Image (cartoon, rainbow, N blue to C red; front, side, top):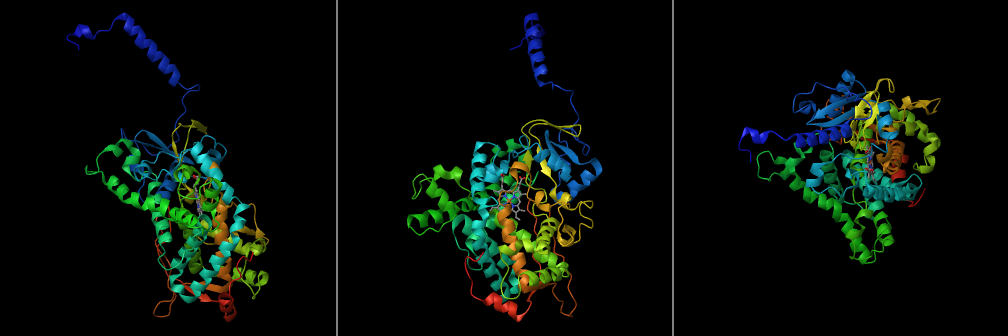
Length: 518
Ligand code: HEM
C-alpha cells in the first residue's frame, strides 16, 4: 500500500523495465504497413459508436441507404466491434469468395449459445467441426447426389397438385407441408401428412428462432456478451427469458425427428434416408453411442422455411403479374404436351420456366442479408482495412435490386434472363448471391432448386394463378406486407385464385401416381 507520495515514484530500474515492455508491445501491435482507414460509414458517437445506426427493422433497405451514401463497403463501429456491410455483388465476391480462406467464420452468436443452438451446423465457427459437417452434408447434397431424391420430389409434387385442386384457397399451407415432406423424407425418411403436421410445425419454429438469432444486432447481448451472465430476473434480461422459451423448441428441432429414426431402426422398419445411412455407416443401430455421432449428423430443417418462402414468392409474383405465365404455359404445352406432367428430364428444354425460377429467387430475397460471416485475419480491400474479427454482412437484397444488373428491379420479368429464347449467361445469376458466398454458400441449394423447379413447372402446366376477385367483381390488388425485420423474409399470407387450366389438366392431376418416374 502507498503511504506517501514518495512510495509512488518508481525506481529508475523499474521505469526502464516498464518502458521496455511498452516498447515491445508497441512494436508487436504496430502493423507492417501504416494503418489504413476503416471503410467509411455513418458518424460514430463516443463509447457507443454506431449502436443507434444499427437497424432493427427494414434492415436491408436501411443498409442499402448507407451504401448509397458511403459506398460499396460501409463500416459500423458497434461498441468497439466492426461490422462491414457489403452493398454490392463485386465487393461480396471479392471478400467472401476470393478471400474465403479468411472470411468464412461466423461471428459469435451469444443468443445461439444461451438458447442451446450451437450444435446447428450453420452457426458453427470456421473450425474442424464445421468442416466435418460440411463434408458429410456435401456427400448427400452435391449436384450429382441430389438426383437420388428426384422420386421424392415427384411424389410430393403430385400430392401438392391434388391438394391445390381440392382446396386451392389453402395453397400456402399445402405448399409448406409438401416441401416439409421432401426435406423430412430425404433427411429422416419421414412422411409428412395431415394439415397440422408436427414435423412441419417444429421446422417452422426452428426457422423462426434461427431467423432471430442470425439477424445482425437483434439482441443487445450480441454486442455486450458479458450480459449473458446477468440473472434472468434482472431488469433488461428479457433476452434470457426469450432464450429460455426457445431452448425447448430448439431441442425439438434437434431430437424429435432424429429420435423417430433411432426408434424405427431399433424396430427394423427404418426407411432409407440420410440419417439412417449415416447411423449405419457409424455402426450405430441401437441407442449406444448416439451422442458420439452428433458431429456427423445434420439435424436441422430450416431449409423447409427457406424453400417455402421461395414458393410463396412464386405464387405472389404470378398473382401480381399473371401475364408472365402465358408464355410458360405455351412452352410447357409444346415440350411436355397434354398427356403427362413435367419431370426433371424436361428441365433443359424449358428455358422460360427456368427463367421464372431465377426471377423468383431474384425478385424476393429470402435471406435479404444472407447469413453473417466473420473475418479470421485482417483484410485490405479497396484501400480500407477490415480488422480480424469483423462481422461481414452481405446485402443480398441490394444486389437483387441493383438497377444496372436488373433494370426495373421491382418488376417481375423472367425474360430479363433470356436472349434468343435461351438463358442468357451474361445476366448475373441470382443463384450466385441469394444462396450466400464462398465456402459457406448454401449446401442445400441444388436440392431446394430441384424441388422448386418441379413445383413451378407442374403448377403452371395444370393451373393458372390469378389475383382474387372482389365482391363487386373487380380484380383485387395483391399486396401483402413483406417484412425485413429478421434474417428470414417471407410475404405475409395473401389470397390468390388457382384454377385448373382444363378438364384434361384435372384428369392428369387425378391420374394415379407413377412413383419413381424420372
Ligand atoms: C430457397 C431455399 C434456400 C435458400 C434461399 C438458402 C439460402 C442460404 C443462405 C443465404 C445461406 C448462408 C450462406 C452463407 O453463409 O454465405 C445458407 C446456408 C445453409 N443452408 Fe440454405 N438455403 C435454402 C435452402 C436450403 C435447404 C433446402 C437446405 C437443406 C436441405 C439448406 C441448408 C443450408 C445449410 C446447412 C447452411 C449452412 C452452411 C454453412 O454454414 O456452412 N438450405 N442457405
